Image: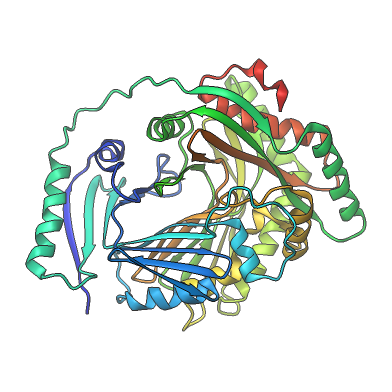
Length: 465
């Protein structure tokens, strides 16, 4: 039986260890820079195995050798996870960390293939790591958790673990001053023009009027060209707007920088948790204005209806794999405060049916209902028809699947992709019958501006998109 090795040492701010490890192969950081929903962060690098899939084509790279397969990628992933399975533990365990793209949904459901796949990203991209660094923000310590996956000589493996621990301990505890870095932006554009956006919203409302759907999450993609150092950009984003489910993943070909506040699904033992998010208002410039925006959100029947629709959808999805009668909504509408916005969320819990695991759960609930619409399948069909480009990473999920059976994934909103000199930042929102097209467009403008203003880009230059 594979056993865990756990080395504990005093807390070091994760951004300092980020600077130490960021250049390692397939570095990933599941980052809780706002500890209101999650009191830990995870880092890992140098995976012993890479799992990638695109539609039914699967690549598994291990020990420098790549094997190619064809099949249902989630079934192959399940078999691979079983190969490294360890008994349930109360601690975190090494496992598979990475992302699942929104377009993986086409491998779970039968959907049309209409939009253009211009980014050509893998549907699944996971590194399998034998060591993870756990930052316990509550207990103020760090645990290096490792397991001898590859059957190395125990002495050699323990030496490797302790060498990394020694490296981490040598980092100065003195707080680093973040470098001031300028980001060069040469061009900004959108994959959907103003007129196209207004026309699409009207088309969505015609679907709603016909009774096809109640709600559609419609998005457009802001694109920029320039120079964006990924590490400095991520550190600035997490400082400007700290969230509980942020993340950084460097594949070598591209980087995903997520500033997400939304938990998609969490599995701890047999307990399942989801935290759908709907409804947004900006934070005010003073306490009076702040209270007014918060009150507006809580009193909005439109935002309340949107959230309740998504709660019903996610309860139905979880019901496919959860024990009958175990699903409950513990908080139907909770106001959450972030540095730049107010959000409302609901907390849903259930108990997974005995004998089912991580991949069974993923098949039942992916992608998250809060970023599709309701009913889910019809909403995804309409999204495929009206959005010109595949969503790829956007509104997919990033997180971990532990070899001990635990699992946690976010929703990849407020997330950007860096590929060379190109930056991609999709923005969207829920369209319902009461939606005003111009107001919905302005909301996407506001969401996009929040990112680029953080980069120091002047607001008056945004007219072009």
